Length: 272
Image (cartoon, rainbow, N blue to C red; front, side, top):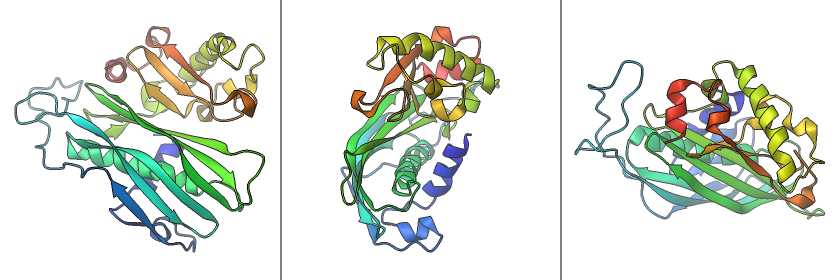
């Protein structure tokens, strides 16, 4: 798992129905309790997955009582509060139903991703608000979500800055899928992503003048990605591949262009 995801899971373990950021943050941070207002309560009484018939090389998917793939439902929750220098009121994606372990992994990881954004580097005062939140994929073997918040300095600066986070969870194992998981030879995978990005970016709003340093074969440049049936959807940060004025840029690298560098089992998971 990448250091970013490890940090997410460590922070996510602190999430409860009412979250006190001082309890999660450590380091002497003070703040008010976080108010969370779910649109629906997560269902956590579905039986555990039956793995008795699964092949040894591939975990069995989560199942319900009828033996069919357990359904997951996309939901959202409002997280609001203040740490003192940071005020936030953000809707984040959540899921319910299905395997309780998967629900916990996804929901806590998404809450922890927000916690990372609340603790954005620097000591400036700012506000965080919702820009985009979505459970982007509920597949046969994977669930994924996107969170984009709007970071605005206090007092306001020239413009708000979007902060991007993604979460991808394997529903067969209730574990996050990291770049290291996806690419057994991580550097080979990053090299391929860099090559593909160089081919695809000229056709986006970034144009041929995209910033090449933003697509260097480094893990941080591809940390925000989402699975789709057609390919690996990569979300670049603000200013990463072009000026702020062009907005956030995404590309989708077809799975077939990654076939020889992706783990064969996870190739079926992320494309489901």
